[in-house]
Image (cartoon, rainbow, N blue to C red; front, side, top):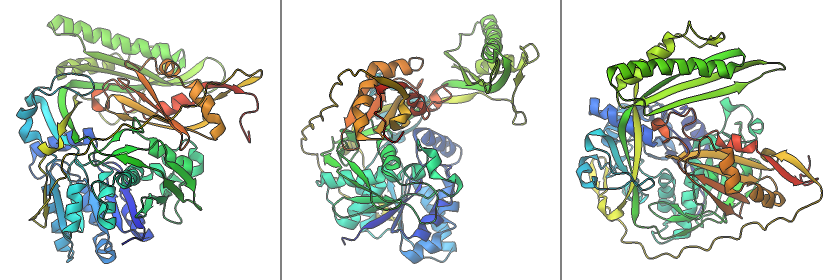
Length: 587
């Protein structure tokens, strides 16, 4: 079949609003894809399975996304692909099959297993963390070990007649890629097509982030309560149009789509996936009608034959609290209050002969809403320690000093005091794809699956020429970067990624010139402990910035208020940029 395949992105994380399924079914789609998993999600699911062997998946996929819409899915012949299985895809499938039986429907449910390597933990004790070089954590502290599997097993399930496919930790975009491979017959060696299908999946995997969510020009997206979820219309030649259901709010523009394309991809010429290494540097996006954007130009080359494995493990305990302070010198007053609590807690630990806190984090947010010295802020104080009791001491001493504080302290009450919680750290390494044995079943029957053989050698692509060095001009003006660009940021473990897209092609040389590695490092000097890399994408035109060791460990391992770098783009967009006078058009 060669007609366009309409794929709807119905979920971008575990806990997202559940109305997207009905919205996309109403708009008419052939496939629904659901991405529920992140590293921290895997650890939460792993702990749930340890307490109850029937848990460890996303139950709202079964009860809400599927439970309310099974009749429409069956009636429309819609395929459903989801990684909602988490660390227990079999239990997820059993719960869903019970719902299907209750509804009197005939839908075949497939399960893809093999990503869960926790039973094989002893095999990997000698592995070294791929980014930091640290040794593998002790086995007794490990909560989950999961390899990122690709599209192959999902394709096998679809070829065997599955209507709904449930996986564990597959690559987010592999769900969409599998649907394209099954529909159009793309093979394991069709690397440009595989890259195009993976890009379609990347644009869908975060739900409405490509249709106006998290968009720099957020005012253009309208009412977020009515935002439309994305639909990718993919053709057999790899070209696609991204759109959304009619009558919904949001925006589908080259900027909104471009921001999502750059989101968390690192090196845009070496976006490593199990099925293909993607090169998005030459991708072009163009308006193709109202809320329709055509996306072309993805390129691919052979995969490395290695799969990323993520380990989550317990690395001590953390806790903190956010409180508000107002009045004159609010920042100084808040820091004084937090420091007093920390000093008292350290005195208690010293008296007990206990070690000091491994990490302390104080952060202030806010400013002066009007003229004068009046200030109002929020202040976060948090600590990390190997012993939960030591974390509890800090919480007790901090709150216990509330009557001895400078004036202006206040905070929301009614939710109870904060409690120590485990620090879930991430450890990543690579494993040969041949070491992973995937098992595919459809309604309990095993389906034959032959993984692809070793990939061929692939040449590294040449790097695009960066914008030329600018000659000095006589007359200049200073504008914030946001006047020149759109930007979006996100995380990969302890690294942060900021994609920056020129609002007009003529701005790109000035953006590249202003956002040197040194300039970016200065903007994030308080957070950055690693390096800064820059990558140029002439197709958009845009640049991607990758900072390492900048999130305090990332995820739940971090004490930062923004542990995933989600706000980094907003910080960078405020950077003053000196440009030739009159450069900005329509200003």
